[in-house]
Amino acid sequence: MSEKQILKEMSYKTVYREGNVLVKQFVPSHPKSLVFNEAFIQTSVEESGVCVPKILGVVPEDGGWAIRMEYMEGKTLAEMLQEEGANEEELLGRLVDIQIDVGSHRASRLQNTRTKLAAEIENMDELDPSVKYELLQRIHGMRNHTKLCHGDLVPSNIIIRADGSAVILDWSHATSGNAGADAAITYMHFCLEDPGRAEKYLRIFSKKAGMPIQYIQTWLPIVAAHQLKKHNPEEAEMLEKWISVAEYQ
Image (cartoon, rainbow, N blue to C red):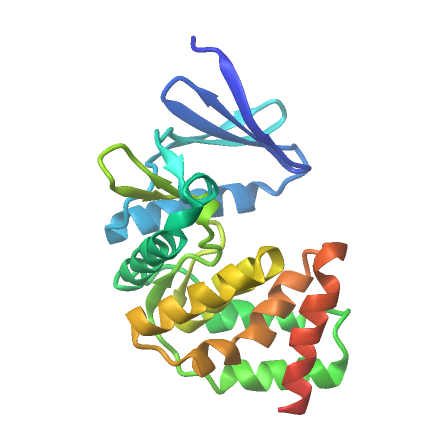
């Protein structure tokens, strides 16, 4: 048996490698339904034609459950951005190309983007009722699309292999719906880390996708509320500022 190599440890899961297998091992308190749902989502995405690690099984492990999948060799786009700063715009363009390609696929079994975000916001007690109302009105005013959306497409979730092809990781937030929401999530994560890079990404995505920047920005208060429920203190001030925009528009 190959030696276990720990890659990431979080409060609710440990990610490790065993030879050609990647394992996401969840703590015993993590709901079994969420583990199986994550495996279902990734399998649905694979069936849609997107290049993702193949699920090899969901198995009991140390009192909890673990998802076993292919281990994919290569560098993440985040590592490439760190190593090749001079090629930032080219690499951001590659991210956008990948995101647009994802949106060209369909995975009708996945939850609808608008439905998922509306349900999350409806259940957020920390939101002022007036703000919550405005956010829900904004969501329901959006057209209902059927594009595959990753839900967390950041550079660390894209692996570029030696042959130049891309593999996309971590599909637990994937939905079927609005590409503008997906772009707004990526833009938001860039803003929280590097505002200058965020603006470059937004400009490149708008041009390549033929999508107005203003449309992407209409999703920002909604996806900011989605991010706020993760209760990260370092992000709260900026997210609350974005959310408050909905109340005054």
